[in-house]
Image (tube, rainbow, N blue to C red):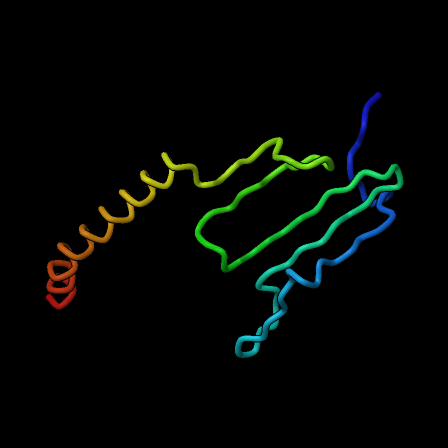
Length: 109
């Protein structure tokens, strides 16, 4: 049997995790810094979502079955991508630092 998972038509309940969620106003903007909620389907399936916009420079998904433990974890960027990204960022900074005076003097000509 095919299971469609969570769809708009089979959601029976959405419950906010108010102990984790944090709504902040900074200047003229109000938004969630952290947000967590659990969606329950008509069939009794549940999925929980937690998001922390200020929790670091990565994104991760963790699948945990109801009986506990951890079934799956994915972190982005992974270690290899993070090294490549940091290396490129470093090279761009060095390149800009070395060429900026030359570019500036060319603009003045």
